[in-house]
Image (cartoon, rainbow, N blue to C red):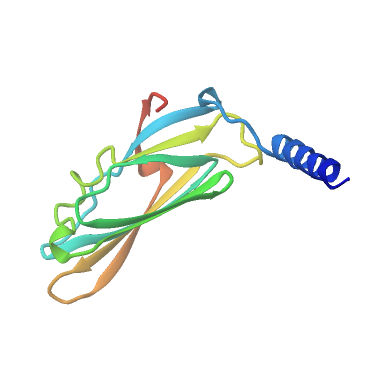
Length: 153
């Protein structure tokens, strides 16, 4: 009796798992390499942090600057978030971000969103004045990003 119950429980578990799991394929996405345009900075300023949020897309690859920590969260279905920060001052970008943020990210945009949302991406840069410690935020919307089509992984 116990053996039959175990078989039934295993079969039910497999059935639930197979119907709940969605099978994703590479052709359900359009892939883009993302670059951030240079931002205006005054002498003594450096980019110490970056925060990115996407809608109808997931983050599939990053090119992290040396000595930066990174946290990527792709757990919200059609939304992704990335937070990155320099762990030492010498790792911060003081060259308006050109080299650090050129093709630094690849996103996969859903061709057919599950929820009717449109493709969006917002980037917030944390810029600090090294002399005064003053911090400011620069927010860039998708229309300011440089997207170049790429191939699937």
